[in-house]
Amino acid sequence: MNLVVRLKQLNEIKYLSQLGIDVFCFDTRYTAKKINEFDIEAIKLAKKQVSELNKKIYVLINKMIHELDLVDLENYLNDLKKIKIDGIIINDLTVYVIAKKLRMENLIIYQPGTFNTDTYSKNYFSNKNILGITLSRELTLEEIKKISEEISTLDLSLIIHGYLDMFYSKRKLISRYLEYKKITGKKLVNNYDLRLNEEIRPNDYYPILEDEFGTHIFRSKKLISIDEITDLKQTINTFFIERIFMSDQEYFDAVKLYTNKLNKSEFLDKYKDYDSGFYYRRTEKVKGESNEN
Image 1 (cartoon, rainbow, N blue to C red):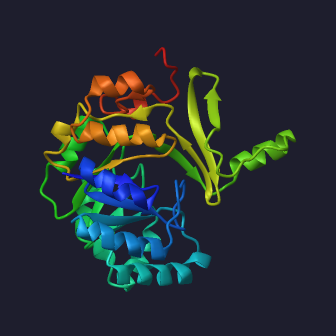
Image 2 (cartoon, one colour; image 1 turned 30 degrees about the horizontal axis):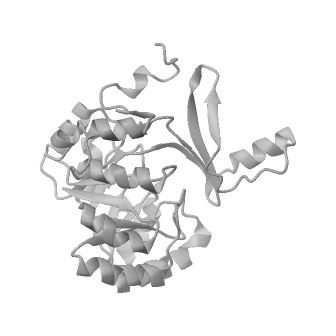
């Protein structure tokens, strides 16, 4: 079982490694909803340190790719190839096409959010010589088991903890809304304190973030999977622990939770607003319904 964390500072590597982390994920200039951006020189420096610890490095390239990005993105992937990173997490298959051109497709982990929901996706990408795919977080536990139990050459992964984004648009929706309402004087871009509240769900507050790449909306509750991890790791090899909207201490404690250094009751005594996501309920049963239903 490999645990993947998103790094915020290089000086966290040693500590997180001691906690039992296997893979360090780095935000790049092509990362949407980033927590910190690492340039090529920082990734190169980290690669040396991480290799000495016998750990791995992934980079996150999850923005929507446009035609104007193509030349620079190819150059950037070439730079990553020289560093010999271990994985590239993508949202847009354009990155796969360029990586294939550079003979780097074996590093690709396709993590599109809600798309990988069936065995067809797994079988299709098994023939593309990529490293792996991340299954949709909208799948139930039984659906995850069914999809992952068949033998595959892919490294199957899952996001098991933290806030999960459920909407991504390249449009700057917060800016446009405040323009419409003639509201001025507020910081909009990269403001991590904004929340949406639906009239039919008065007790739910959905984190919303506008960054340079668009607008992102997240579930109101953070996912916790400690009760399911024993079953999941029977057929899934790699697990991502999400960090956005969390304090460093909460994140480190989340890592301890999945490395058996903190128990669930201790964790939930300190941190609130967690649930089991869609492990035990299908998404179509809750769409358009209030919490009371």
